[in-house]
Image 1 (tube, rainbow, N blue to C red):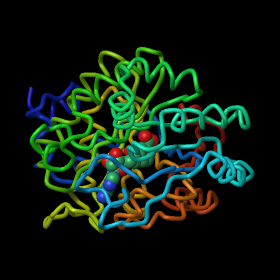
Image 2: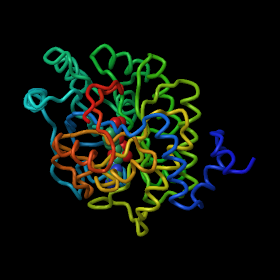
Image 3: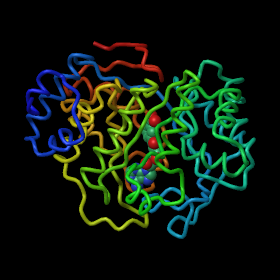
Image 4: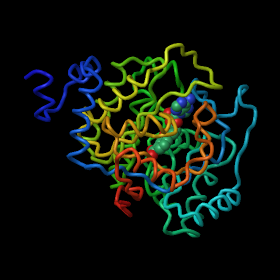
Length: 354
Ligand code: V47
């Protein structure tokens, strides 16, 4: 069977097939990806009302692409107290957030309890709030720093009230590229192992892929296939999130940036190759809202959320520091011909707006 026959008959693609998709015409690729999206979601596009909090930017690791962590490029170190985090949340809860997404740098000075007790405090004050927190990179850091196994950290996360895990820290799985962009932190195998352990607790997580820097198309396909293999075993990933590399204020020397066509192809290919991960998120923060809206025509069915404040990607140049108003989000999705559907963190629909 040739590639087009496989696409027409929804046959799972091999690594070589998947790589060959990049040579296909963009609009043809978009048609195949849209067909899959339409069959599963029709015109619905999911978003959620959430708040991002990044409690510290002091980091033991040095990722070349990161502009957020405190370094000679970003001398403004900070670590929030639990009171500061809770008072930040007070306003957000009044604004109607359903999820708090907490990701920190790898700060060796705070102690393990600072990382964990905040979840318990949030749950005590706002039991209805979904806590999405601690990337596999943070879990790896905490396990090394405090001499605990991954499973012990995961048990503590469950005990302290973490509901789901975000997809950060995956970057790009290819070992050579990974060494160059973020050598020293969680390895690809460890990232996958941590998510597997989390899924084995009957919990959900997301998976990201940082692309548009020094990786090749082949590296992206390899990344997707490693995720697809794990998802076959666990079915624990809710969403795949291709993150477009932002170039400001970091240490990585990149000269060739992906065109909009290349970004859209990557979305469409993700939708086709990751046949077992239900949601494809066009994270508007890194793709820009304009391209995220167009990505709806290339397989994406989720645009993430209102965010309120974003520090990691905005430090590297993304226009996301102040999030987006819910009304604006809804209007943009509607005006692009799709139906905005508010979802909770586990992708249950909470409100559909006609
Ligand atoms: O892992 C860091 C990325 C990630 C840059 O799970 C950069 O729902 C682009 O994972 N250019 C953290 N990206 C953000 C993240 C995330 C975001 C939204 C939703 C979810 C989810 C997860 O940000 C890091 C890293 O890959 N990042 N620097 C940069 N210069």
